[in-house]
Image (cartoon, rainbow, N blue to C red; front, side, top):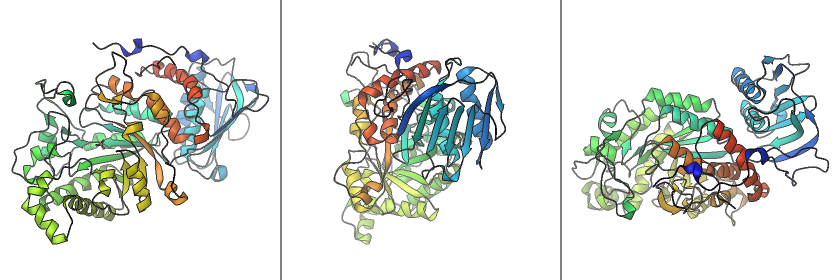
Length: 542
Ligand code: ACM
């Protein structure tokens, strides 16, 4: 039986009580409790007094903004949602309820901002549009939608900047696909919590989801599986539902997502997973495999022995695909997977064994290293950088490859010691497809367990590294695989509140992290998710 998730046990705080006193940040004379902001700003001091907005709200913007009208629109929306009063542009000098100032000297970190509220008004200063954007996201959590204009806002001073430059969420659109509006809604939510990277897992054994014009059968054949396993094959499930499932994003739709994300200061990183997790492609182009096939788009979950064969045809395919992918996705990074590629077929393949001999390689793992270094060279020649899952280290990765450590932290530790940049995304702390609770009624999920507290306790920088090694840890990422996550409601349920915790891990200073304080700030965010009709898992009684 599946319960309505909202009927699960609730934490006894409500949004009204969520404003909390942040004693570590408050000065001696605060006149108000600190607003419930997630992620917690790097520094926040409450001051005496309050700001009361005018009957018509005036916004002034100064400085050389890259996209003035986008920031103006967001500022209008935030103020209008808060107080439902008309908003007008104000002259750059003179009175303004909200003043936005872009000044090159406002902060060394381009994502930083300061936000000051005094009796006279609100001032956000930042060195870039991105900093202003994040300042407005913070303001939205202070001047919350529908709040009382007569009560106004408490005077305060925030000086904020992220701890990490890479703050990511990965969404698997291969196992189950999400609609374009659903992905846009996720990007909106990511921006609110200051995530700046959307890693889009577009291909896997169970479906190929991105149109590639020079390989049209990826859309007509690889995007469709004829049915799907019911339940969890790890627990012995074998029955299939008999229902065809599939679809793909056109390049025009993918460009629309890239533009939508960019407007929210989010970069989209596409992932084309290779040489494993390629059965869907082999179903359309069996000549890319080491054995004759035929292959069917996978209808169950797990890892397949059938992988790309390291043949000239395969390299032509990979380069053709990546050429189109790089044209659609302008991100510096292109993710080429590299995970879970069994060597079974390569062991039996004369072609693979010939390359091992010719290149003087030790074994099939070294051959995978050779394969991915060749792909890396192609991507680098186009001015881009590859990301690979931590298995890419096993065969010897090109030093310019960035490593995404998922099988724990050790891959990331090894990688920074070898001089790679690293993104930490260990199963132990950020696999958002894992079950959040062992309570009955939890939706079907991978059997592993990842409660909110474990995400909050994630520390992307392990002990024992040198300062230059620490500097190579770009940040972290939560991964939402979707074998068991079928609908947008399900996606949201897995994301929230765990991505609140991850947002705080990746943005806030390590020493400011405070589990009990975090729990007190979550309900105000739940109130906002309720208003936006976004699903989430309620907090357990503490
Ligand atoms: C992975 O979870 N296979 C990267």
